[in-house]
Length: 498
Image (cartoon, rainbow, N blue to C red):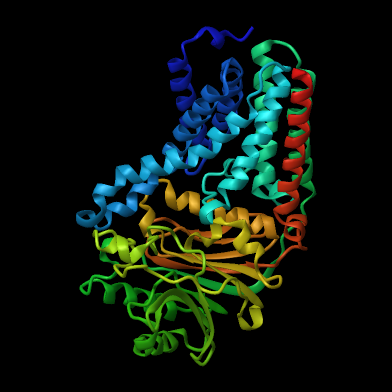
């Protein structure tokens, strides 16, 4: 029998929140994936002990709130860059972010709770419902899939399943391998299905990982620039010239690479008035093309952009970030909110930055076509899948100084690794304060520059792998399969009640 049935609900609520916090230790920088699996296994008996759908929803909300509060604790960091304006928002941001995202799990727990039925079957139902909730979390209201369950597998062989199923599919596999097992352990019976799911998932993951093709390095050398400009000093007139001079020095260093990449917003001027800076970049590059981040204006609109300077220093490419960070780069009803002193942290203008037209490919000369991603666009599978054609490599420029020095930058790097695996493409990543890295198509960091260090790294560009299954089919088949499974389980549960 399940011993937690006799516990008061408040105790089960608190234990669920603690298990959620434990599960977050699977995320970077800890990477203790066992903690996530144990937490999910122990969550199942608590779910089975609940009698009503309302209490099941509260239980799911508690677990997810604990998980997101711990995993996304870095979210308070941007509010202390300009503490006088924004520090008061920090606790509210964490509370509302964690509690808001947890509503997806609460709905899943509510929808999965059915009276009667076999405990293992109920746990399977819950796994499918939570998987659907995670899919919704990645898309609803612009989406925020950060801290998805698949993220705990980065740097393990299991993560290679991303190239088959993507992050939502791998998250579903994780839930199906743990929740039913926890239900069987609680009831001390019905082990056949859960053990089959767990062992099957492990065999699939490990077996597939050993079949992945080897990665070949090209002869192209890419230089990744990391000026290490703290956010509170980045635009300070006393410090901005220093950070720009660092990047010029790193750009001019010998031996010469084939491509140079500067991070997000690395030019201390708007594009329309940046020619003296761009001329300095061209002179330092000495005939090497450069990707760099810059802000630009177009009438009343402003954009967070990336440009490409060719060997002669001529601008040959432009990309405007299209997936903006809410309350960072723009504020909903911005002009109204501005009257109350509420602005996006990256701009003081009313609505903030404008969204670009969407994903594009940028020509990088002999290195091929790049799919540009600015900052947290690399968190979204849909932004990569939206490319008009297959790129030769992924290119992320970012300013992770906003994320502090604890977990945020490392989690951001982990998600860049995931996008590389999903597409079978290398990822070059230039980050203002780190972690700048070259990532191969298997998600492995081949060369990197540590967080908080000024400098540059020269790295060979890995060749791409054949287009992966996930790159061909995307998220929709996974969503559809989960929806069909949910419908079948719901119908079966309904028949059992009749």
